Length: 354
Image (cartoon, rainbow, N blue to C red; front, side, top):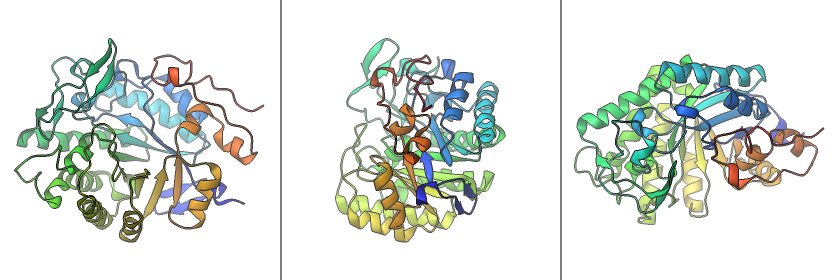
């Protein structure tokens, strides 16, 4: 049997196979509250051994996109409980991805009284979708010391809420240009306090949140997603050697924390040296994601460079993805026009095999 279909057992990750459903924003959380439609969506895709949810904000000010879910109110916790119950009934595990969008946001997407914040006041170049069309990113307000402390506290509370909602753990979104990755980039983080400047200081926010959540809910219930060298969401490139040193330092500290996994968003910019260094520095599970077919994923598992492999759009368009790859059946093509629309079309209505 191919490794993809075999159970995976390491630490707290006791999974029915080696396949992960990657986190994908779908914008179906009306009023930012998870609902029955979302529970149906995730249950349909519970062929994956592990599901990682779409990015979910730990606080109102992190809701940078329309209709993304939160985990900071009682209603949101109850809404997510529908999802976790449905996935667990199907025999899969599910982690909640905590995503604070930081400066990748627009004020009109935030609740009244909230504003876009960042590690500094450096505005992102580009546009973001809002309910009234595309708009330039809003200029962020730089977080002061109290604001940083609030961000940390919000993440800890959100992680506790996730466990209360029945999740098996949480993944921190430290990739794709959102708040935690913004803290790592010296062109975005121009702070002069203990959260800026050196590699150690720029890593401080991520590590502080990781370590405090690990102390709160258990390190075996914590994962982190990273995307070294990726420049999406206006993340300016910086010196290759410094990028490498940043992630080697960060991963070494994460390894000491004993967290469950590291989730690498693969991209052509990651150097082979960086790949090898991360693998050597991290003892627990490494998940790779982005651009894999069943065949290339199997090869990645066989050569030991990844412990698990995540699929995104393949699961988006194929609720029965695991059955399709097992039978070598053709895959549905995703409908790009309905990725972020509010209804069931392009969400829960993709066809499955007879």
